[in-house]
Amino acid sequence: MPKIAYKQINFRDKSLELINKVNEIVGEYDAQNYELTLRQLYYQLVARDIIPNNQRSYDNIGALVNNGRLDRIALNMPQIRKYNPPPNPAKITDSRYGAYVSQHGGKSWELDALDPRVLDDLIDKSIQEHLDKGLYLERERSEKSERDRLLEFARNWED
Image (cartoon, rainbow, N blue to C red; front, side, top):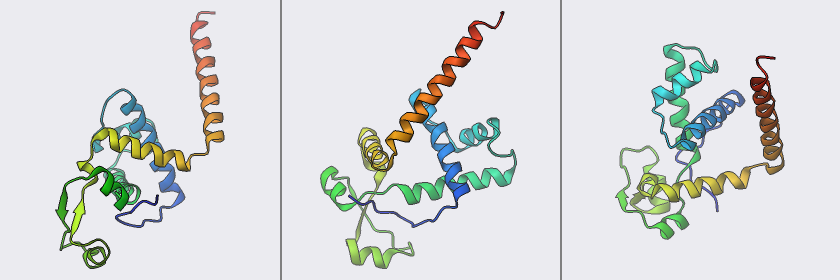
């Protein structure tokens, strides 16, 4: 089932790498049931020496997160029929209004109106469709091996 993107954005490889780092950080916090603000995310990227600590970097992260959000996730019509979120009037001021109305009519639906568990499931299914499972499992094993080595090193620190 194809997704509907609010904007079609062709990210550079460097931006895609940064998006992956952002997703890793957000995932770490999400696993602990925490949500990050943009400012917290920015400082996590700075603290991990991924980006420099300056206004330009902060602005760039804000734009990247916004553009990633606009390109990655939107409801498609089968999902709208299945989950039945409340409709909104399409935004007349949006530059895509005419094309949108001709294709979908005068109603729009907000992804944010869905239950967070539904969103989580939709995102997970989308990721699974694109995930190289072999590579993912290989990286997972590698990370576990490295963690085990670090734990062993820590246990034998005094030696």
